Amino acid sequence: MAKLKLNEATMPTIDEEFDEITEDEEEYAREKLKSKWSRVAELAGDPDRLEEIANDLVEHFENRTDGIEGKALIVCMSREICVDLYNQIIEIRPKWHSEDD
Image 1 (cartoon, rainbow, N blue to C red):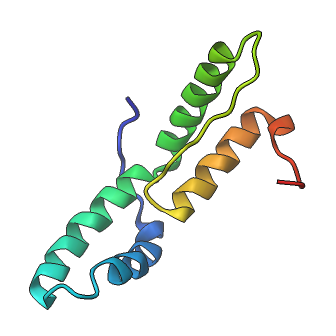
Image 2 (image 1 turned 90 degrees about the vertical axis):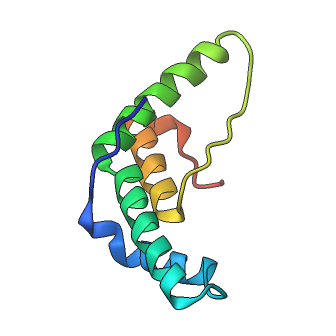
């Protein structure tokens, strides 16, 4: 399992997404949830953690598709984390990127 580490750079994006999700919550509850959400998202998007996850995903996918074609679906906590994870995967397997997709 990839460990979570703090990363201050992701805070502004997390705050915007959190505001959209919790716009109907009372202010106190929103602030409490925001604090928890921000900490978890920072941890989840840590570059070292994403690198570890990318390596695990590539290895797992290649082992599962050895001899047969297959697809994969990866879900992340935010769009930013998805992009960062995608970039990590493409660093490992550049041929998996296509301008057509």
